[in-house]
Length: 110
Length: 175
Image 1 (cartoon, each protein chain N blue to C red):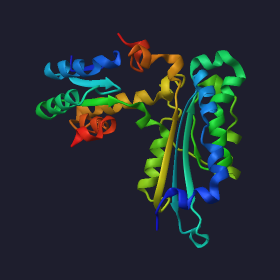
Image 2: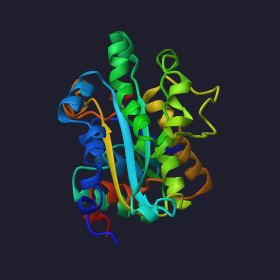
Image 3: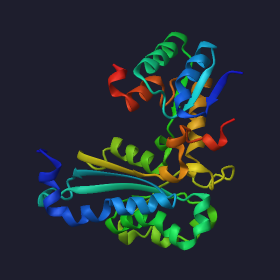
Image 4: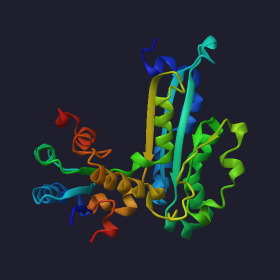
């Protein structure tokens, strides 16, 4: 085993990531990365000490529309951008993932 | 010179602005139906409109439907598509990766009509035969996983590595 996917309830992500990095495995963790600054600092330190890969699974980063927008911005398609705004609508109530402490992969978690 | 967004945009674009930003009521309506929508607007001044002093807006928008939305029929389909239609009315960039059955209800002539000033997004994986377009988040997870595995293979940082993740959820922690 080289890597671990952490798709558990939110409040377990950090400790499981720390344990996984301690064990010498790469980590793909569901969002959020952690609940506390101490947990974040520990994960940062471990990744920098070990060179192991860590990624926080925020899939929105790979939305084609957003990728295209970023690319166009980098290519200076609009000239001098002076203002931007974003919106995101998601059915948090019906999914109940926040209430239950579960991640976005909760239904698929092993 | 840019001072505040309100001074530059709101007075002349109040109606359009208010029309495209989801109201709390609309947001709740979408939420009850499991619709997901992500949109980004950027404003800039370009050479083309500089003489009038007007601002040029580019918009990128993406909406997705969930499997269960199909159970609710056309009404919920419309709930998810409405934000896209708003984008169409105002011009900009629209890309949607609905699943097959729902997506087929959205004619390409609407999605990409040039009269709306739209540009179809070219995506090398938009019709990849190995992908299930009914999967969550429009298959974005596939590319997230691909980035992770490639980073391991090539020994390079992931797109959202620990420092970037920290920066995104707790900016003060990344220093």
